[in-house]
Length: 498
Ligand code: BES
Ligand code: MN
Ligand code: ZN
Image 1 (tube, rainbow, N blue to C red):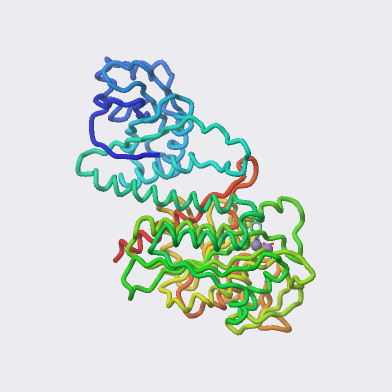
Image 2: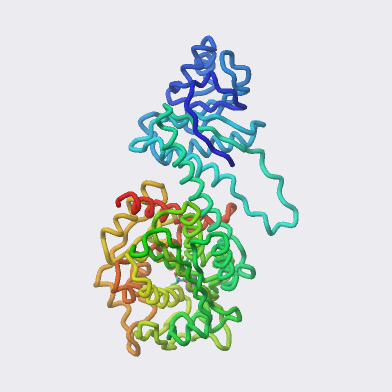
């Protein structure tokens, strides 16, 4: 979809659809008032008759409004002014998308950018609008033999800015919104692909494709024999039961100075998690194809960052494998030696994410990272603790954790901190090895992070558990692309702070 910004009077816009806000109770926005005047009070008459109260998300399409050059006018309810916040602005945008898909307009001109959203500037509103339209337009039908008819929808959206001075900021916001959306879409596509297509090898090929598209990305893939040589016993123990060879994928993006230490992102890439010998119950097991959504977010961020040619260095590391039962599979009680040299007693083969991450996190040291952020659908316990709204964040460096919390708020891809206190480390005690790979029933998300913390002592590190946020179950089952927006905002903030 095409987006642009423009500054001008609503009545002068030749467009298929002029989009204008109405807040509660029955209050026209500034642009609405302008049209109302020129139309001899037609809009206020309609509002007075009760056809548009301004209720959040309500829409009403009008034709032949005198005094304006637009083919149609879409009134959109904004709710009460005092309630207008990030979430409600999002709901307004969703309603606009829905209403637009029911009319014939191919392009529109929106004055919703004039809406006051507490604490958010024009650039934010423009960026959110772009991301919202792109999110709503997304569909995944590449594996259906008959493609669904695409819903009628906008091809072009012009967003109003108050003055010509704002055009530059508006255009930057559009670029950001489009780049983040393309990253989100890539992450959603990879997540939605089934386990028989999106294998570790497929992810490795995806990395090669990124390198071909963006000369600023250099990809490297370690095979199982390379990992064996390095001593990645933990990662390889998860791959032991699978016919698909595991891959350790790294993608280096160079946009900053060669002396700038990189942001390193490590994404869990379990392309299917059956639980292994500690096999999972059958219900909703198909959703374990989404167990590579952490990896998918790393691909999404790398491609968005390269697309925008951001002046920063980012490294993506993706340990990719399946977790399956087999005669060769790792068994409960087996003890393996990780790349760090620490030994691990595997008491449950379904706690496999931490096993592949710990070796990838040790491997990350070689990039001399500024910070390391890992992203993983790591624990069902995370959904019990926090539900499906925020991702969990835990880390060993509170400024980094706080930066992530702040970035998440800004872009509405929220994270909430859980305590990574030493007290919890005791739960990982093993009688036979340096540690066990599970910490018992209690505080499962925290003990998983405690496990990882033993491999991240040499750098600033944060862990994002996205078990509750990476995909949606039920009728609208599908990957969300989270936390690509959060990570992109974090990167923008980092660039800006310099
Ligand atoms: N991939 C799962 C976590 C998961 C489960 C994410 C359901 C989203 C929805 C992970 O590998 C896993 O199986 N974790 C176990 C850990 C346990 C054995 C300590 C879990 O959460 O049950
Ligand atoms: Mn598992
Ligand atoms: Zn898993």
